[in-house]
Length: 115
Image (cartoon, rainbow, N blue to C red):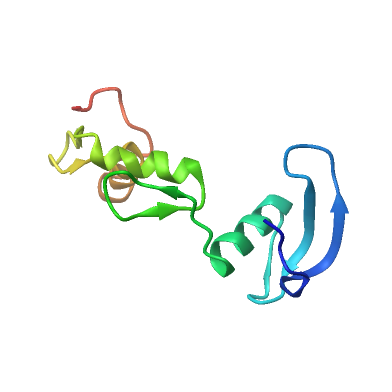
């Protein structure tokens, strides 16, 4: 997808690799500055073009990145992980980890959790 130049301040550079053209600079529309070129590209694509080619087969959600669709799909697979300290249940491991950190002060999980 080509990004209109009105969204970009800074320079355009050609690079080798799968991404092809690489945007260097910041988003003029949102006045956001990105440290990494791929983050700028993703920001413009996701926030200003709402390009979401990865659709969930189970619900109405769609995503701009395949990784996000895979993570979302975990909620539909029927598995859940239970907190061993309060029995709260989560369908995604990252949500269980965040819960453990915020509610119980544990930054890492032991291998003892229910699936």
